[in-house]
View 1 (tube, chains in turn purple, brown):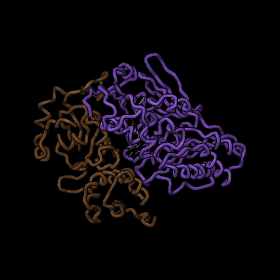
View 2 (spheres, each protein chain N blue to C red):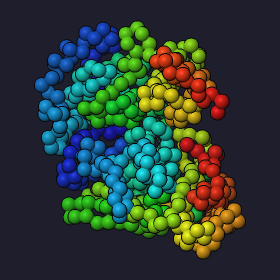
View 3 (tube, each protein chain N blue to C red):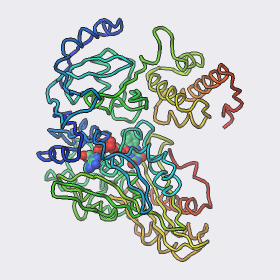
View 4 (spheres, rainbow over the protein chains, first blue to last red):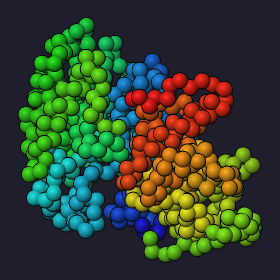
Length: 334
Length: 218
Ligand SMILES: Cc1cc2nc3c(=O)[nH]c(=O)nc-3n(C[C@H](O)[C@H](O)[C@H](O)COP(=O)(O)OP(=O)(O)OC[C@H]3O[C@@H](n4cnc5c(N)ncnc54)[C@H](O)[C@@H]3O)c2cc1C
């Protein structure tokens, strides 16, 4: 790890005043220290936001759920009202990583963590994602068993944020604050796919800080669920995860969000799967058809064709879980 | 990391409780994070990049140590303070061998910067026992032979002891969940579960409660 100065801030203004000149924000530090230990980033200054009280706290009001970006994954997972009304978010936070990581990792840091790709995360490889003049994506012809199976022609990374999956499905918005003011960005606009910019995976600009995450109150009849599949039963990254939000009119599905986590370089909604569900009665047949539809445009690489089957199953079982027709899958990790 | 951290307190000195006051005295006036009477910091405080003195609250003692901001709590505990009970294996947050409690909550010492632990209450495996009297979870680990190579054991004990603090009557699934981040390559998990459930049962019996549900059937 490089030498750096550590600046401990107490207010958002102090934080904003410290950004610039390559300084990086540190929240829980889980992803940032990992990248620094691997020499992927070497900031001269870490701006510690963990002691900024105004970035903490979870409040529920009639309009929805307001989450301070310093809310830890443990706090989100164990919050009774989030478990009740925003179940997919509680599920996702509670099944990410390990108990220790969840106690430290923050929601802001979780959605801002850098993608998983062992070539990107190794200082032994230059690649186009690192923006160092290389035009290569080593995953295309290399070891790619965990890489993206959709939208992967430019860069085959995956973004592993478990919480981003339900946040996208629930229509969340991210508040970004800079010295110039505040702006709200819909979760659907938050991530930038590699075809648009291979280097930046979010719209967050230098000098901007996530100061709040807002999830609108669910419409009556909303049911949601999230399940994550990995190689190991615990302490593992997802290799397929699905977030499902259904708005039910009795047995009929009126609206659906089907979100896939590590299928593409950034979390995506499957319009094809949603079209299968909307207007139908949710049952085994429609749930399976939704899984199949989501994988219609999959373009797996040499070693990750298995993920297509895994996603079909993840979507099918999570649709039924959200609809209350199936128990939580024992083979889903965490 | 390139440089060896500066040793402020020798292991023996620490263990005897001798070196602590001396070392604290030397750098008292230069504490990098000045706090007021209520413990609040004023303004953005910069420390480093060079080594600076900080005070850490560890196992009920205030310990002074001089570190660069890039040193992790795990390195500082082991290399500067001689508290080598905390193990470092993966150094990336994946194995939890370095589990300590930060403000009573299990956390990763390898992914915590020492400077970021200022003002927090750190408990390490050394802080669980009272002198030569082991913590009940440690006793149960010995009784149930819940370790093989022993390298994951301190972290495992910290996770199990924390579980019993917040849930005195855990079921098997609760114990599994509590150690779901602690990697044991020897495969001692069944004995770790048995040891932890045993402590819960003994405590319940000792306090006169009847504990019918040990959860061992699950
Ligand atoms: C073994 C293991 C397994 C894991 N499994 C999973 C998993 O299954 N699912 C999952 O989602 N994650 C998983 N993770 C990743 C982990 O959850 C993330 O590293 C963590 O959530 C990052 O949060 P943090 O607060 O520690 O962020 P930090 O490391 O502090 O920050 C991460 C990034 O976000 C930026 N940032 C942080 N806060 C803000 C803010 N408020 N505004 C702007 N920028 C900000 C930082 O500058 C940095 O670039 C796993 C990690 C480990 C070690």
